[in-house]
Each structure stands twice: as C-alpha cells, then as structure tokens.
Image (tube, rainbow, N blue to C red):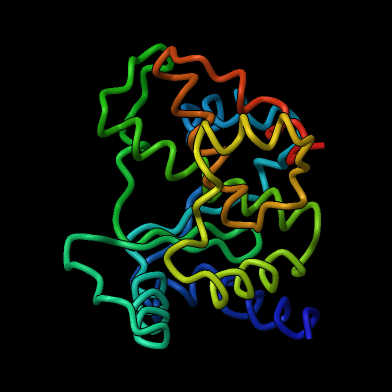
Length: 207
C-alpha cells in the first residue's frame, strides 16, 4: 500500500512541466534564507536538496475541506489556507512570504516568523518521510482521523514539563504533534524565550 502511494505521488509531483501545465504552478527549492533558518533546527539531519516547495496549490485546501466535512467540523474560513507535505513535497495553499527574505541577518517580524514556523512544521514532515518512508503519512492520517482538530495538541509547555517528570517519550506524540512541537520550539528560539523544555523532545524527534 505504501509503495503504491509513493508511486502515485511520484507520478503527480515528479514532472514539473506537467504540474505547470495541469495545475498552473511548479516547484522551487528552499531559498538560502529558508535553508539557513531550517538548519538551526534540523542541522544535517534533513536532506534539504530533496525538498520541493509548492506555493498557491489548491490541493491542500481541497483536502482540508474534505477532511472537515468528513469530521463534521466547521468550514474553513476563506482567508485560512492549508498545507500538506507528501514525501519531500511541501504544498502550501497560498504564497509563502519567506521566499521574499534575502537578507540572511534580517530580523523576522511577527508575520514572517509565523510564515517561517509554518514551513518548519512542514519540513518536520519531510524529515519524517526521509526517516520513516511513507509510513509517516499513514500515521499522520490515522491520527487526524482519530483526533480531528485536537491532532496538533501536544499539551504546550506545561504538558511537556509533566511529561519530563514522568519520563514521557516522543513516541507518545503523533506525527502532527511532533510537527507542531518543533514549530513552537523554533518560535521560542526566535523570540528569545526559554526553549529548554522543548529541547529533549526535539532531540528525540531528530535522533
């Protein structure tokens, strides 16, 4: 099943000319700024050259709409866009603002920080794929089916502190919780906040 899924996604995203012709968008690589920011988190654990970014894709929003309908969740607001990662392909429902940053020493404003942390979340899924293969996608979809809107909730800082006391392991978190945890870790670092509570769990994710 996972091999068939990989083959299907390869057919969909393996030919950029076909993507541009059929869907009106192509792929790009990570910019120098995005790669530098991501390396703060992933170091050499992520193969950045294999990652492709798709912006303004309708597929993530369509999948989100279907998922909300199945789970009987409220409809997505028009200005809210979704993102999904299929293998090394990170698809965003709108244009990212991170690729506009060329100054490597630029201080991110609040909006840019949210954009970059969104990308960090999706790159965590790319890392999961590079580590686990297509199993990661099955695990992510399974968690979404069971938990719905709560699928991203890892308990926040207080939840992590409790897990540390009980020697909780990262395997207790689903794929989306892991992505959200890494995302919040990045935000804490960039805001100059104490990120120490995240570090043991992030190390487990990237080990």
